[in-house]
Image 1 (cartoon, rainbow, N blue to C red):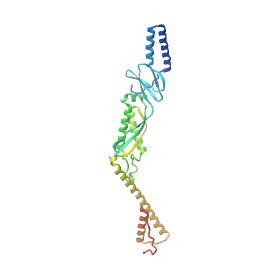
Image 2: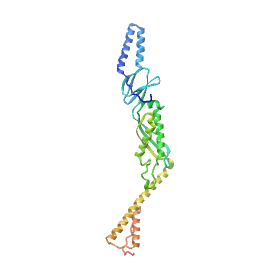
Image 3: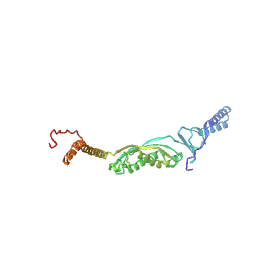
Image 4: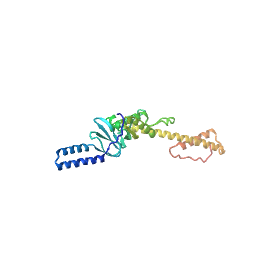
Length: 286
């Protein structure tokens, strides 16, 4: 037997009625002072009691007979089975697992702190009971291994040029990373009969020793990107202004005055502080 087997067992209420008959027999033996009848009733009642067990909702019982797998009872209720069966309970409820924060290196070699949150449940009771030593501990260990592998496959963030902006990163591509983590974890836990319902990164940050340096790098990248947009917009506005002046014949400017105008407009548009203009009330030459 190498796979789960769902079995049906006797109704517990029917055997409870049989147990009551044995107890009645014991009472009759006491009244009649029949030692043999009393002993027989006590032995049968004791054997019968050992066969009762409960299966609560979203739980199961794995039945063993002298080390041999008999089957699994998943339907909830009150049952009776062979008193010699060893009955091992396994929960079928969904469980949350929040791993500890571990320090690993991302794809670029930067040390980061990362943890994972997984939602899982037992799908195959035979694998969970017999293919691994402790399936709950197996989930913890494999989750840690999966998140370490995942972190090594992707960079924490993308500091490259815009041409590589679509690269998957741990910080920006949460959906893609979560899908990759769920797939990796599912493959690792398949041998334990565990179904992964959801897996995602619970915590993500640079390690303390490089956190300040990386924060400055992010700020510098953001400033450069913002300046790039400002310059692009300013050049467009200057070009539009020159075209409108030329189109409407408002004023004719030679190359020297165009250069001066462009310089002044660029200073006004690109400056990060308010500009105080100097009004010329004379001629263009003064």
